[in-house]
Image 1 (cartoon, helix red, strand yellow):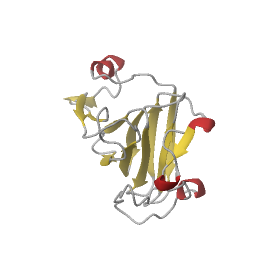
Image 2 (cartoon, rainbow, N blue to C red):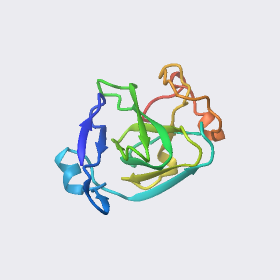
Image 3 (cartoon, rainbow, N blue to C red):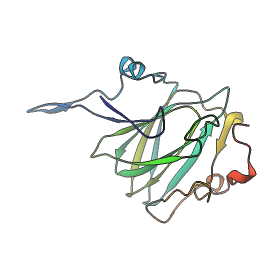
Length: 181
């Protein structure tokens, strides 16, 4: 596994290091020792699968607060997505900054999302499938979210939004919420 830290401390793009032969290739997609070596939490409490029918579908921006902050390891296994994370750590030098990463079935990249980062993505193809390894159990009382179109964030999504849940479309704007509460 090849780890590339992003401008948001603790967030990594992880590329495979495939070993090929006449059969195809083999690559490790998760290794607790390698994650720990990079100072990351290798705990997996849940694995989730998301399938999206239509290009332009937007899911997010979700995170959980204490005592149930969660890490995520995101991979697109079919199609393509534009994955975005936002630093929600008030003490961080990159507080409220974001990055976007293309995750596709072809590039086989994954994105490691640290605790207290909001996460969401937009599908770039029909029938996009995404798998999440999550480091904490879903805890509804700790769930928070950001509006995908919040002007304070200025996220540039690649496509017009074709589908979004009512909950994700109506998270409060940042100026109206207290982060971490």
